[in-house]
Image (cartoon, rainbow, N blue to C red; front, side, top):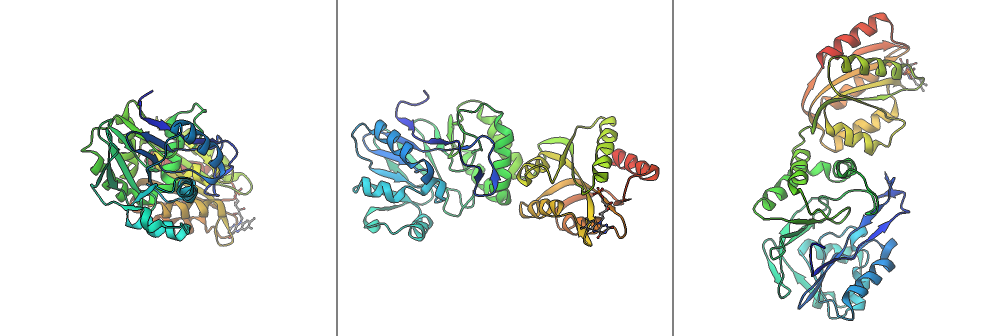
Length: 381
Ligand SMILES: Cc1cc2nc3c(=O)[nH]c(=O)nc-3n(C[C@H](O)[C@H](O)[C@H](O)COP(=O)(O)O)c2cc1C
């Protein structure tokens, strides 16, 4: 165990199908919460209403009859904040610790009796002593929500990082951290790269041995790996040199062309990942798009526009500030190909995009002349 005084009291949710009611969960999710047992007792966030009972039982076991002195609220999203009111009722002398924005939000979500007397408002750099442990507060606005703050405990070199460094998946599942952490990061925080950069700069002055996020495993080793990935992701730089081919097809001809192109690009020595946008959740496609340095968008035309699965992908990429990539476009249409123009209307708004010209147009099914154009594209990209 990495700490004598800091205890994990979170819970696994194996049955939730959609995180935030939109991101499919293959292996559930964990809601993390911690308790620090010192002269004073501090609970670091509550958890989702779905796992309240398990959480309260674990908390009571760890408390072994003691009271809670402080509840630190680092994030007001319901998957972490759902039990604030419950805890206030159970421990009437407990102080609730948050910043000014936290308390506005608490009042939006709850009507807590006597909250004014329970309030302990902190700001950047404030500290709170529990006895042998000091809590230092670092504001991290928009590292998901505006009230987010992180807490550092210098005596144990532990960072409570709120949603940062979190991932999908329960804690009893063995998987590689990066895949589900990347999908989590880009879909949930991706829009706020600049704010994540600001938070990382603040943290760079701290000696950190352990990161305790609000989802996913506690990180105790090789922290440089995770911090570097967060730096890459939040600066919108590709993580790997390689090509993602994302295609959307009605009848399958664009798929054939996509697989031909994949072989052609691979023949040039580049790594290629291929995804069918109608067959994978858009959140998966978003994670993969940010992972690679190059993106090929291929789609059938649809009602003078683009096939909806592609349009949803483009819309999400736009929301997440997709940028700094090389992009190519292949359209398919039977009478008035329109996919290319629609795709381009999105791509043109993205920052620092090296767009490979020309857009390739396939009419219904790729023929010899189209294969030659795809060969040329494989070499250019
Ligand atoms: C509802 C619907 C709308 C379509 N709209 C267009 C269109 O606006 N322009 C066009 O050229 N083809 C349009 N098509 C035809 C397909 O885009 C075309 O057949 C294309 O070659 C299909 O490629 P795929 O085999 O990869 O799906 C439409 C097809 C459907 C089913």
